[in-house]
Length: 372
Length: 142
Image (cartoon, helix red, strand yellow):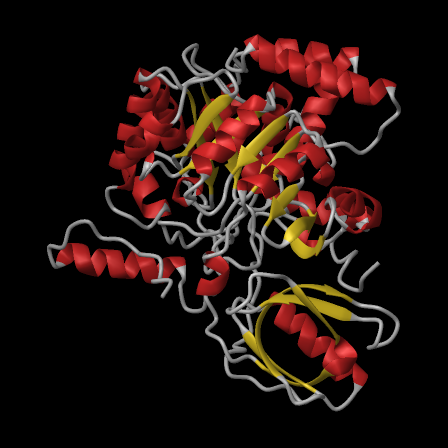
């Protein structure tokens, strides 16, 4: 079990309180983007394509605290940009710890080793290090040779100093599930608490627009990579969300589950899609046309999305909101997902470009490409 | 519900292998003709999606260099507005569509021409030439 009991308890009681109070739309994780500036220039990233005057702007600690208090989510993820480039990031983190928020500080870790002495280990603080795969894959993904080496140095130093550390991987088209499994082995050997992963989202603003997997391909990749798990692998994610990625569960998006706040305001409708901004969290909840988003809406901008910020809240609410969901979560925590069909998938050639679905013989799963 | 919604059925979505990305128009340097209300709305929607600054000329003659990050479209141009940052001020500003006389996509498109294949090609060429520490670097902010 990768997520500590105290964090699970905080989230579970929060979900139950909201449920019993009849609240239907509530946040679980605030995506707090204190700046968009970054020290990488990844081709698949849609978060940093701004003019210099925008990249120089940043939220003040007071603006961050106000957003956290207004939103009320028990967890705060701090992505960017690269948060360690924010001159007041230590003050922001300490302020959130004082407010007893579980923080995931997302970093590419190029600066982590240098900045670590400024932070104090806490059960509330996790460094979520962006690592997209094994050395060559990661360096290609972040368009920087040597990026993997620096990130791993930062991870090992953080673990040694007693910090909670997870890795955070995004997978795009062409990812080899065998390499993903090798990557899981590598990161667990580094001593991290758990692995976080997600398929890439087709950001409108990303420079590269040709390597985003559709849902069928996402499910096939994750069924191959996440079945037949090794006992050493730990995932810092809801087991139900992982089952969703593998094609065993169907969820609708919960875009308000991970609201995003940045220099522009409260982003509509979610962390990924930029369809405008609201001045307050209340305004975001009350005036966003939620029915226009999510897979059920048919909105093409949501078509390939199976990303954690929209679907993990759905899985967490399911897990803590019903006995059936809770039992599924418990079972998923200890399940190794033995699956011969998934083993066979590991031996198939990787798809490059649109290809036909995997042939099936015994259809007992809903999605054609993941049937055993 | 906007026009683009309901483009895909659930079955189509679930069967997608690859997702067609956004095809970005080459807007850098473009000056749209703002003859009618529809022209203004369409041009400002493109400006909202644009990955660079634009120059707005108001009917008063004032020129504003701006990064547009938000818009609200109402029943009339007077009820529609956009929100922007300028390079020289810290605060968010707002202007009504009805006040806009001219629009120019004057700033650089910050993502144009940076494709994955370009990176792989450049990497392979540099590697073959014996270079090390090959990387794409963020542009300078000054």
